[in-house]
Length: 241
Image 1 (cartoon, rainbow, N blue to C red):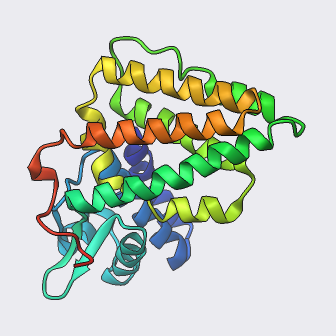
Image 2: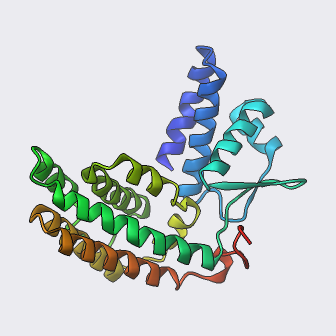
């Protein structure tokens, strides 16, 4: 929520300086995205244009452009005569996403291990590891989401493959993440942190086979945990059917 509050406090200054329409679109898109991530906007919730334009003090043009951008990123979906709603995936969509992510993230871990001997990468993995193994029984949901995303983003950066990173960005499902991690028990978080450590150990050891195997097992484990989410978070059918 702090991120959203900062954006809100920055809005009057941006408008006073006469920021371009492009920057207004960026600002609104990021504010809505932050609202989805921190649970302010729930999966399936309709985003009423009149309410949002009043909240942010903008016209419908920049808002609609921001919503189109978020739709392209899979954060919202836009339907004729209904407008924009926060995307609610089906269980099948989530399952399909995890299966593709298992392959891509496994490949990223393998490539990271292959490149580990390049200058500076050992320190980068050590930095990524810091704080991820030190987990207690209590944790802040948003902090953990940020730590988890930093971990996975770092692995893709270490892979050195831009196309792989681009493909992974297209497989994000931000609308379910807050709900998922809210249900995360401390034991689940501890297990996830241990898996992160095993993946990074394999990468730092320069062992591609082990790095890929550890990452794929981690993604499968996360997918299995996601099956315990209540039906209210899912639509009945995939949007591509």
